Structures are given as structure tokens and as C-alpha cells.
Length: 195
Image (cartoon, rainbow, N blue to C red; front, side):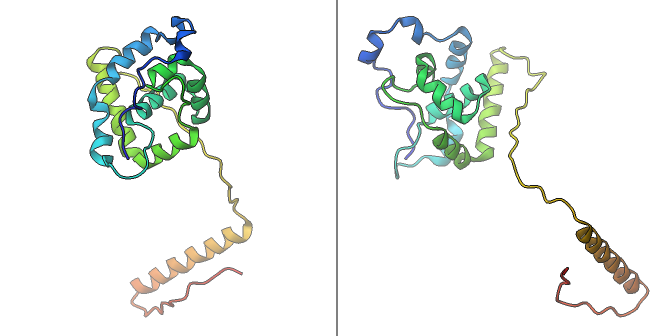
């Protein structure tokens, strides 16, 4: 089930009454970003594609978008994002998370990012950059790119594999030469396997 915000996220809690107000105030940059994110253009791609009243409630759309902005603003991982937002009242306020509630977990954020897909994330990113350029926050001449490297096993080539691939290529070339010269070439349905 798609929801936009946590219910009653703006209502102050007893917890807030005993803490200094400065803890909840947004920095000037975050305040400006907060104003930009109030534009419904950021929610539209997700709402159009995933709007449903069925299923369990998921991470609210506005919370997800704000947490993703915060992730790239702070240049941190999903694991650190959840901890930092949970422990910082200012970030909770920015992300529209009630003070007595924890931030969505790193696995929840990763699953939702995967569910929405690269296309939606790219569209959100493009909309955000367009809004920043419209409001003259950035000039848009330079782009900062962040890439994630995933660990994987490397299959190093062995002498036997290289030799086998060389023999296969020679056989393919010889077959093509024979066909061009007009010779009949018997093509076997079985693929040769290396031993």
C-alpha cells in the first residue's frame, strides 16, 4: 500500500518538549532543499506507477525521497543513513519521521529502491536537478557522479581455456572459408566441450 507521509508526523511529542529547539532546526541548505521537495513533481513518477490501496503499508513516498536526498547530500551508505537519521532530530524532521519512531531500516530502503527501479530513481534525480536549476541553486554545468562497486569473484583465464577458445575460433574461421569456397560443410548440433 502506497502512503505519502507517516500519519501525524508534524505533531510534537513529549520527547521534543524537553529538548532544545535548536536540535530540530534545519540548516539553511536543508531548509532550502526542504522547500524544493514540497513540489509534488517529485512524487508523481512513483504515485503514477505504484499507487495502490492493497498490501502492507510501505515506507512513505515523501520519507523515501527525502532520505534518498539526504543519503547523497551526506555521501553515506544505506546502513549509515538509517542510523544517522534515527539519532539526529534535525534529519528526522527533514525526512518527515515522527520523533518517537525509528527511521526505515537499510534493507527496507534498498528493497524499495530496487522495487522502484533505475528508471524512477533517474526520473526523480532529473526532476530534482531541473528544480535546482529553475531556482538558480545550481548552474548545471558540472555533474558529480557517485558509483557503487560490488565485490564479485574473478574467473582468471587458464592456459587450457585460452587454448580451447583459440581452437574454437580457428574452427569457425575454417568453416567460413570452406563455405565461401563452395564446399559442403557439415554442421554438428552438438557443441564440443573441453575436457
